[in-house]
Length: 260
View: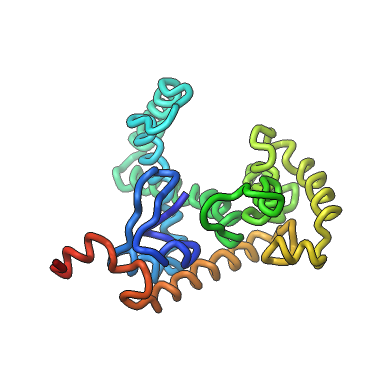
């Protein structure tokens, strides 16, 4: 999944003029707008997350209506979305004024942005790879999961806030595991990982860039790690010069420059 032209979590994304987006199944090119946005991504990331729910609405509806891939229970999903939108609209219209209606909708969706931060927090500061994974023992499913995913350390009494999203490692290993069992699975998985890849061991350092196979910082420490990754990619984009990176080498830039 890629997030251009708004965000880039690694400078690998914009080293070439364009790349194949395997999620959206299309070529994504770099241009002047992408250069500016990525160069400032660490500044607008959190405000952007406050609007993330609206993007999910749009992406979900586009997927269900266009069906780019096999869709299970499509009509049920569309009916559920219709009921949800009707409920939200009805609640908003029941308020005394338009200002309160709009304020409630925007504020409630902005608060939901905390969950968007929670999700990306577990991935964006971790290892990224080019090409395809699962080519051998060094990047098989479990190793790749540990390299590209981290948990967030939270006390049990806050599980109702994080709703299991803090256990992304276990969620990826066991996608159908109910959220109320994720904390128990976390203890079991961590024990197995530490037995096979002890922290600081030569094998652990070779396979895992952080030198730790099971990475689990706290919520605020994890946010700081992620923000630093965004800032690093932003600074790399700012330092990109024409001809050295993929920026400015798109059809849009060619047209703006009247090339050819």
